[in-house]
Structure formats: structure tokens, C-alpha cells
Length: 587
Ligand SMILES: [Zn+2]
Ligand SMILES: [Zn+2]
Image (cartoon, rainbow, N blue to C red; front, side, top):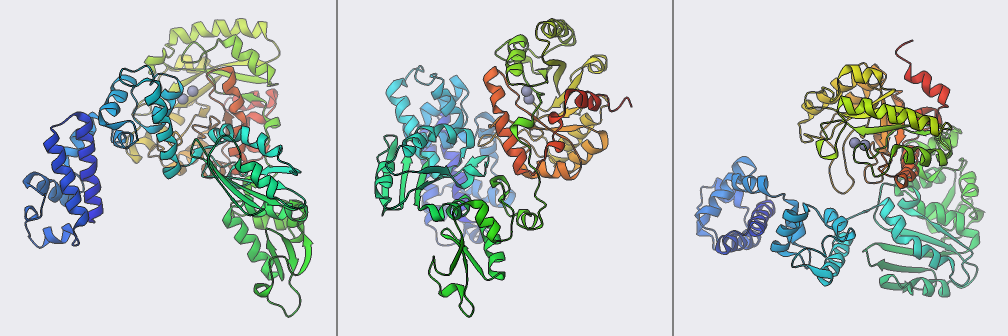
């Protein structure tokens, strides 16, 4: 263990004690000790091993010395664990925000249950922070800016956040003098679930200076810089950085490939190009003349073969055009050369949504409103999947209420005949893998969706056994949001997905790709693995209101990143085919 690790634990302990309102002298003792540990040139671990007395160091008393020895011995500090049992460690991060501090962090936690920066952001957005005693509008604004700065240093933004943040900017850029075409590149174009910064390409014939100037004058920028006639960069108030490139028409396709990435994909196609004595860069594809070395050529020297469009660029390299979602160097380069790229699923292929909530649990609208909203989206079928009773705080369905709900569903079916409405429940998987609904109800449901919402910190073996046991239940159809993760908020469960997917294959259970951009659970790698194992994937929105149904496109994007074709996705099937699947065990 290094001094840095010791200092970190002591800092955390000091911070959490401060949030708890502990004795200021005690807190200062920890701060002083951290200074000493950080400035010590020798590893404290060595000193302890050599039997030296740590209290000989300035600022380290008996109490702190004992903590350090315990940490070196056991990897943890008992006192820290005690404190963490009372308040989450993420509050220390919150306290570090400008304008928050220990007292306010405690208040936010006590009154609003805020544990993380993202929680705080959500409460700010809902207007609840401003109303707390001791906060007010001005301090809320200050915190909002602090969050933006914090994100700038630490984080990636969710894809849906980025889309909202740059919508106005894209309109602004499109209106730039001389801008002929505007495209988003980078990880946003590849539809990654989180985005570090945004790349925008603008096609412009001639001098790009006015385009760059217009871009840097965007009113939503807190910082802006231009670098000549082709490059500019701004930071939005949210902390999101956006880079702009101005590109001439003859290079636009090459630049789009180059700036879309990923880096690994670009390296792979460049390596292939070298074998064919070609050179590919953001300017185009060039033939390296006999006897010349590519390294000695200028950026746009050599015989120009392609550059205007992406199709042309890939074509010159002997490849089919690669959809951006696949550009991660996971086999797409070979597939594009062999002509065996997958025909990826599209939003228009989706025929139904198989997870959503109504006012029977925590949804905001009635079954009828959800059904009308699904019908408007052109779906052939849908399932209402309200929670089961273990979710008591959202009035999860008891067996009696589930049966009562079927009557309402029967009514809605009559009123909206254009869509098939399946009865379902999102049944909680209890600790040992039992389902939170008796078998007689499960057997009568059209569709049984199961998921974990409680005891999420089980160890890997216990969690895997729990989920596998649940999907072995003979009525189960779909395992929803399998890993429980919340992007930027909650890590996935400790879960052996390989074992879970194998069990799903064995028991003929489908896995959900939850399309909510806060979840996108399964991730692209697991989605791909499901496909390999022949486990059908269901893309569902888990909508709690009609607007939530529009998240379907995020799920489809993620499915594409996992190489899914329509036939891999269960809810692309027609109603007749989907009914056949539901009846798969009977036959
Ligand atoms: Zn759920
Ligand atoms: Zn749900």
C-alpha cells in the first residue's frame, strides 16, 4: 500500500466525520495527518514493517497511527466502515463541490436523500434544492455551475444529456456563413452510451475562418478558442467540450471517417491500407508511388483515390461502408472486406414495447393512455409490466390487484383494438431467487418479466445463483435490466453474465436491453454475447409515461453496437410470430 492510498482513506474519514458534525479538533487531526503522509518521502508501510513508531512523525497521534496500522494490516479502517454505514462515501465528493460544504451536503442527504452529484443535479432540475432552508436560488445557481465544472474534470456525459446539450449549438453551426453540411462525428456518432467530448465537422468550400468565428461566438459557450481557419473549440456551461473542424468537400468523407473513429478502428484500416500501398488520413485515400515511402509523403500527396464520401473511402480500401455503431475494431474491418457485415436492426423494425408502467405502480399515466401512445407509434403489441408487491413504496401489485388489473386491460383492449395488449408483471426476484408472485398468477399472465430491485450488493456467486434460479422458473419469459446498472450512478451488480446468458439459452428466456439511456442495460458486449449464444434480446423502454416510449431509439442504437440484426431481436417479430414464441414451451 502506498502513502497515497493511506492519505486517501484518512481524507475520506475526515470528510465524512465533518459531514457528521464531529468534533473539529478530531477532524483537524486527520487533516494534519494527511499532510504528513503526503509529504513523507518514505513509504509508511516500510516504516511500520521496520518497527518504527509512527507517532514520531509530526501530526500523527496514537489514534491515527492505530488507524494506519490497521489499514496496512487489513486493508480497511474499522472506524471508516462504521461511519460509512451511516452516510454514503459519495457525500465526500458532494462536499467538495463549490457552494456545498459539509453542512449542506448533510442537509441534502437528510432532506432529499441526495447521495451523488447526479442525484443533486436531478434535485436541482426538479427545483427542490432551491426550496431547502439555507439554499435559495443564488446558491442553487452556484452549485449548478460547480457541478458543470466537476463534470468537466471527471466525467463523461450520458448520450441523452449530450443530445440535449448540443441541440441549440447544431442549429447555430448550421447557420454559419459558408457551411454547406454539418455532421456530428466521434463517439456520439458511434452512439456510445457516454460521451467525453463532441466533434462536429462542417463542410465549407474556401476559407473556413467565418465558420470558426461563428462557432466560437455561440451564446451558450463559457469558453471559446479558435485555431486558424479550420479548427475551433468551445466549452458549454455544462462543462461539455465541443470541437469543430472545417473541411473542404473533397475531403469530407475521409474526415468523417477519421473523426468518427474509434481510434482502434482507424488504426486497423490504416494498417490494412499500408499493405496495399495506400495511405489513408483525414484528407483522403492516396496511392503511394512506386519506390516512395508513405512516411516521406505530405498529408495530401500521392495519387488521390477517394475522400468525398465515406462510401468512396471504404471502397478505395476494398471495404464495404461500415455503420458507425460497429467502428470499434471488433471484427468489422474483416467483415467489411469479406462482405459479411451484419444487416443491423433499425428503429422501424420494432413491432412492440414489452416493458412499461402505469398508475397501477409507479407509472404516471393510465393503461389506456399508454396503449394509445404505443398505438400511435405504430406498434402491433405491448405489455403493461407494473411492479410486484416487493416494491411496496410504489404500490407493487399483490396477486389480487394483478387480477383486478386484467379486467381493466380487457376493457382497454376493447377500446383500442388496433394494438394487442399483453398482461404482464415486472416480478421482483427475491433474495434466494424466488419470484414475488404466486405460480397461479404467473401461469395466467401472457408474459412474465423478472428483475432484481433489492439487495443489490450480494456477492457474485449469490447474485448469479439468485438470477439463474429465477430464470429457471418455468413461467419466466424475459430477464429485465439484467445488471441493474445506472450509468454514471450505480455500478452493475456483481453478476456472472456468461453463466446467466447460458442459463437463459438453456431455459429459453429472453434478455432485455433496457432502452432507458440512464440504464442501457445490457451493454454492447453482453448484447453481442447474447446473440452468439442464441439468446433472444428484447429492446424495451421501461417507460413510466408516454414520453418514455421514445427512448426506444437509444436501445436500438445500443443493439446495433452489439451487432444485432432484426432476427436477433424478439420484438421485431410480427404479432403472430411473437405469440408463437410465447407459446414455445407448450409445443
Ligand atoms: Zn425494473
Ligand atoms: Zn420497470
